[in-house]
Amino acid sequence: MTGSTRQSRAGDRAEAPPRNTACYVYGILPEDVEISEDAIGVGDPPGRVKIIRHGEIAALVSDIDVDRPLGRASDLVAHEQLLDEAAAEVPVLPMRFGAVMTTPEAVVEELLAPHHDSFAAALKQIEGRTQFVLKARYAEQPVLVEVLTENAEARQLRDRIRQLPEDVTRNERIRLGELITQIIAAKREADTRAVVGRFEPFTAGAVVRDPSHERDAAHVAFLVENDRQADFERAVGELRSEWGNRVEVQMLGPMAPYDFVTT
Image 1 (cartoon, rainbow, N blue to C red):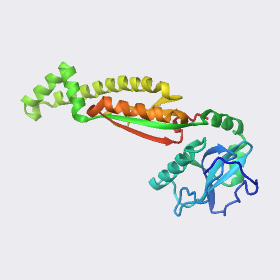
Image 2 (cartoon, rainbow, N blue to C red; image 1 turned 90 degrees about the horizontal axis):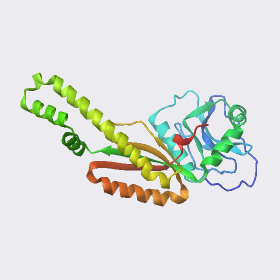
Image 3 (tube, rainbow, N blue to C red; image 1 turned 180 degrees about the vertical axis):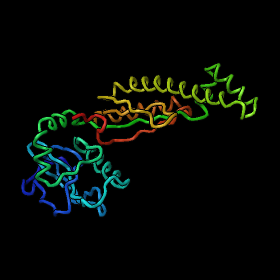
Image 4 (cartoon, one colour; image 1 turned 30 degrees about the vertical axis):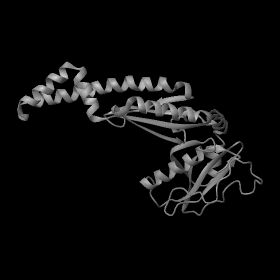
């Protein structure tokens, strides 16, 4: 996929698929984008990806068999992979799960035409930017040591559980579990706030995601200027070094800006 201007407008709209197929829409791009001939999307076999243009915008689509259920793991992977590859080169407004429309004409009449101006404005807002996701998770033993070191009640409960038979410490074990959860949640809130503040100089936006695990330390999506990616990645490396064995840090991206598309 490239951002070069097209030499011809012939075939701007894909031919209407056979009646047993429909148009699967992945996202919205600028109209002057070209698609690689070998680009493939969802389906079995995967559908060939096409561009449907209208005005200043275009839809990234492929034909799908309407009799085949969507939502398989392979479909989600293909959907995200195509959008992430596109976002690495051009601005793209991703549809998180895709939209199915009856014909190429319906894509224009029901999607592109009614929302043309808002889509075009949103594309300009994310031009030159891509999304990264930072996932940080407390290592189990270090965070438990922190909890017990910092909280007297937790230490007392731990000691009582150790000293008595399991069948008589049910309430203590429940209370200790609740306490650990509450303390880790407070740590997560503080560490997430620190992460967002730390990366603010290198990013154009941040969205705090809900925890995906009980030991999450931070789960944040960042919108990063393309010319600041090296600074952003360097800051991630510094954070990883500072947290050391306490927190496992993973960075995902670049990817389509799912968390920053509100249109």
